[in-house]
Length: 384
View 1 (cartoon, helix red, strand yellow):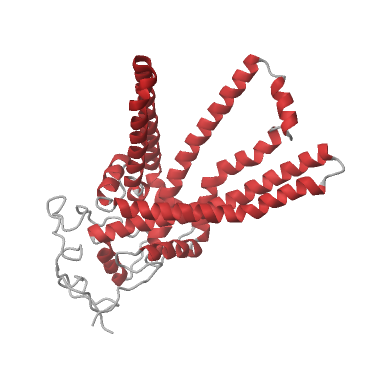
View 2: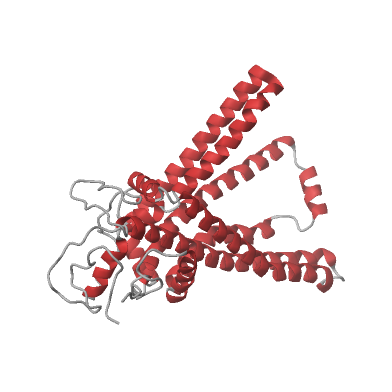
């Protein structure tokens, strides 16, 4: 008699379906709100501060902004533009590094939630801090690769424009489109790199290689899930922010008609700060959800390729909780269906993506299996 694999935590211990990944992401946030939302707020903090400070340092109206810009000299205008561009570049780089580190840290409560283990904010950081520099290096490699590729494309465009004139568009346009497609393809292949670094306790380069390997044969599936989640988060975020945008416009036009100069400026600042706070809260939830989906997607790929669900079942049967990250230390095998072992001593994969039966000591766990579970290849069985 077939019995479904147990579900001790947010998802069942078997390869996951799309709906289970989505539900597991919501359940993880609900069970670990301090860790997930706290890290999400940290990831959104820089953007929230910038959005909140911007209304305080910019002119209140378009007319005053035009007058202010008109009074600037050429050197002042150049310095202003340089400062703004430099600030935006620095802001973008810092945001990327913070986001990557947060993504890696937030994998910890997701992995622990699979076995119904709650994780606080402090425990999450204690378990993830050893991988912080590896995550920083991962972000640095990604930024450097993008900048180098963009510089090469820009250099090639300049050389072709100088030698061929307007005819260079025939080469430049396909080259640019190919660059965008390549960056998109690589970004999908490396989606689970932060999770790999934290769960498998590896460095940045090994994380990139493992992410590349574990997504082999699943690129379209990963792409579909990433796009659906991004679209869902974007739509919900806009729906939440629409009432606040309408309210700020209503206050600006209705609440201060007697003294437009002062009251309008004050209301714009208040509306800007309120929008920044709400945007940070919405962004924190969205970031936590997207990161949870990414982590569950990685764990699903490990279940399909490496038999991680079997290792987690064995850990569940022991009843031991060492306070660590479930899945760390589990042997890594070659990715893809029915592939051979990736290193000497690795066992061959069976028809259900797991190794053949290897009997262990006769110790019965809470589900009636011995410590050498799984049974020989075939539909898993458990007492009814």
